[in-house]
Each structure stands twice: as C-alpha cells, then as structure tokens.
Amino acid sequence: MSRLETAFTRQVGIEVPLICGAMYPCSNPELIAAVSEAGGIGIVQPISMSYVHGHDLREGLRLIKSLTDKPIGFNALVEASSDAYTQRMKKWVDIALEEGVRFFITALGNPSWVVKAAHAAGGIVYHDVTERKWALKALEHGVDGLICVNARAGGHAGQRQPGPLFAELADLGKPLICAGGVGDEAGFVEALDQGYAGVQLGTRFIATTECKAHDDYKRAIVAADGDDIVLTDKISGVPVAVIKTPYIERVGTKANPVMRRALRHPKLKHYARMYYTMKSIWQLKRASLQGMSYKDYFQAGKSVDGITSVEPAGDIVRRYAEAGRREVVAKTA
Ligand SMILES: Cc1cc2nc3c(=O)[nH]c(=O)nc-3n(C[C@H](O)[C@H](O)[C@H](O)COP(=O)(O)O)c2cc1C
Image 1: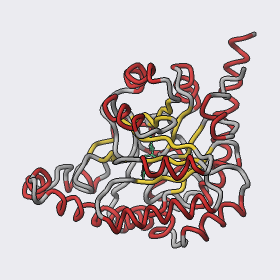
Image 2: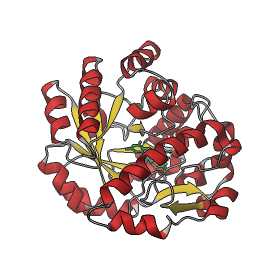
Image 3: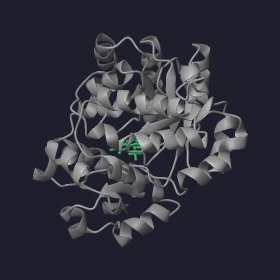
C-alpha cells in the first residue's frame, strides 16, 4: 500500500493526504479549487469567502465547483460567542451540505451539531485539538478524526511539538492530521512516517499564485525563517503566530494591560473577546489585501523555513505527492 493511502484519504475520497487548511483571510475559492484539483483537499473559510473575497457563500462554493469536481472541505468555527453567530454558522453548514460538501473541520467549541448534520448526509467531521483533554471532549461529541495543531503552526498555534502531540493522541484510534510547521516535502513525508494520516498546511499555500494575499505578504513568507516567527496577542487577544516585521517590532507583541485584565475578568471577558474578534477580522483583512501600505501584520507559522518561492498550489501538491511515492519506492527497493 502507498504511504499516500491513509485512513483519512479513504474517508474523504482524495488521493493525497494533504489539506490546504482554512485561513482567514487567505482562503479564496481559486486556491481551494487548485489544491483539490491536484489531489489534496482545500478547505473553505466562510468569513474569508464572504467578508474578504466578496462571494456569497453558495455562489463561492459554486465557483469552486466550476473549477474542480473533486472534494472540498468546510471550516466551522463552533465557538458559541453569540446566538446570532451560531445561527449564521448553522445556515452556512446547511448551505455547504446542500452544495455537496462532505468534509468539515470544526474548531473552538462543541462540534456535536455539525457532527449530527454531517453524519446525516454521510459526511465526516474532524476537530482541531492542541492536547489530549480537548481530543477526549471532541471524541465524546462523535468526531471522526483530529486535526492536531502543534506549536509550529501558523494562526493560533498549539503548545506541543508534532512528535509528542502524536504520541499523546495515538491510542485514541482516530486518524490524526499534523497541522503546523510543514513547509517542504521532507516535512510531509516525515509526518506521515511518524504515523499521521495526513498533513494540513497553511502558510505554504499563502505563497502561491492562486492565493489573493498581497505580494508583500507572499514575499515576507519567502524571506522569513523560523526564528522570525513570534506570537502576538495584540491582534486577537490570544497568541497568534506572525512574522516579526518592522511594524511588529515597533508595536510589540503584548496586548495593552487594561485589555489583558479585561480578558481575564469574569464579567468583561466576553466583551473583550468580542472587541478583539471584530478588530482582528478588520485588521487582518486589510493587512492581507493591502500589504505594507497598511500594517505588516502577516500571520505565518514556522513552516516558512521550507518555503523558498511563490508557486502554483497544484505544483506543491504534486511535488509533495511525488516525494511520498518516491520514498516508498526507495524503502521497498
Ligand atoms: C493566515 C492564517 C489564517 C488561519 N486561519 C484559520 C482559520 O480561520 N480557521 C482555522 O481552523 N485555522 C486557521 N489557520 C490554521 C491553518 O488552517 C493551519 O492549521 C495552519 O496554518 C498550519 O500551520 P502552517 O501555517 O505552519 O502550515 C490559519 C493559519 C494561517 C497561517
């Protein structure tokens, strides 16, 4: 059996165990379609689709379907921040199901309602986890697999390195996806050899011709190395991995002390989180689309180490797949 055929590829019906992870604000339909068309799977981020890239969700999903007939996935952030948000997310998940999406990645809360809806339609749900206690909770809610977000990831990173995180979750009996730090083929093959059933990349797919992020952002990813990645809680109130650009050096990486206190305060923390969510949605959109002319708030993970050029997303998927096959041939020769 090829290393590329895993429990994950069989569940989702794809050829290469490679996910282009959901990225607010970098997930645009053309990028998602290019990854799926090449044999991996691209994930729709609904807020990125609508608020950043200007597509009504159904119309955006149809645009992707006009570019590829291969499977795509959908990111449902199930944080119960308000009733209105939950209702909107439920509507989006229904639309995704109606448009034929059968793979869901949930994060940040209780995924049981997504599991119920997806399973009723024959779908599959994986949940983002950073440690065992969250994994156990997610499994209680019936998810089919786990996205193991490690300390090298772009976006909201975890605390564990990929190896220890795998060891902590391996006995749970579900397919595990390595999310974070993989920026080249060697890292992809290494993760599969560790026992992961697939690998989710984010940063690597920003530096592609299909991603609509500003060229300043892509250039900063290509130029950066792992030591340039720092965590800041200034953007969203919780640590986010960004490139240490001159702007980040100037403004620092710590939220102001009043807001830090508000984030811990039992009565105020809900409002403080809401404030940060709105602020980060707006700031990250502008930074991604306007580059240095706004503020160079460029989210990226330690995977920048392996990224040396901007290239078509499909070429990346094919190159990684080839490396996976080659290694198997070398091992069995
Ligand atoms: C710019 C950016 C935005 C992200 N936004 C989201 C998101 O909206 N939802 C989510 O579940 N994960 C999000 N992530 C995490 C990615 O889906 C993926 O797990 C992560 O990027 C993997 O680490 P890597 O960047 O080192 O490849 C984001 C990552 C980046 C870099």
